[in-house]
Length: 477
Image (cartoon, rainbow, N blue to C red):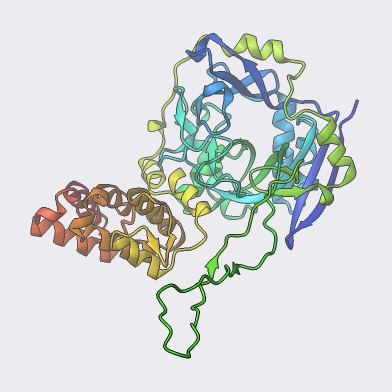
């Protein structure tokens, strides 16, 4: 039976969102639960697989019985040797069509037929080709390890929408070939789309097409712009804050301190108006369904797509599940590390935004100069309101990450002000490490150079980082 693919654009808060539904798809690309496997090391952990065809590609170990707020242990499955011809051809065809000017719904049609049944949000977004911790993504998952930012729900971001921006590979690094890269170097300059990715979990997506292109983009400082396929399946409920007056006045009490003169009446002083926070209600039922990047209310969903979500399952075992399970524990082959890549690629990866920075960027709407000045004085409140967090260290960390992502010059000024204040020494080491990534800043170089030359005790915690920064800056110059 042929897959039934339908697409429709919906308008949400003035923005157009492309929705694609897949019915009777081949389920050749997707995720499924593998239950409790012996390799978990804990009876409370659950295993999920991202698979392509009959091969498990990415192994996700979900601790705490799959708790959505817990980060996952991620590793590349060693038995995967490449895509099946049909899948390889579909990816190549879709990639070519997109770069020839086809729309997302038209260009990715062949790929949609290979997906699991469900509804997907499809859009374009820039990705950082790292593991979210400064390591180039392609060879960063040879060993199973906990990856920050892989939790489905981020405590920092909360219920807000966000766009995933870090990567996990679907090809082993021994596929890397310098000759192939040379051929792609010139192509990336002309491409409209650099890769095709499928959202996996949290801030992470897996690369279906464009591994070599990611290296070329990093080397030539070209944005790694990808077509993103993101499944919509999670229900959500919006809290309701009714429109009520912000303040109410309490009954005026008698004034016992007032002593009337003969023949005079007591003048009662009205009580000050006390602000009252409006009540928040959580309604019964759900508001709609969401993916990381979009929330779609029930009333805006096309009826057929809504029915597909409600009557379907967020995740199911494909017919080739037996083969996936058998290959999951296949013998490991020798892993290839990122060391085969040019050093310039690894160095640039270290300077890219990381998970903490992205979380902070989504967790904060803005920071005024007045709020930053309060933080520099050691205050966590401004005008009676908490700026970021009641914890001062957490506030500094989040503010630095937000500024580094949103405004480099303000970040440099704020960082220097912190490192120059001995009363904030508890944050010096972290801030210095963050600032060291701004290797092109002359202002930061002058500060670090003066700190190294002065040997002042107040710079004790930043001296190692400052010395490394000064040496690298001089070498670059």
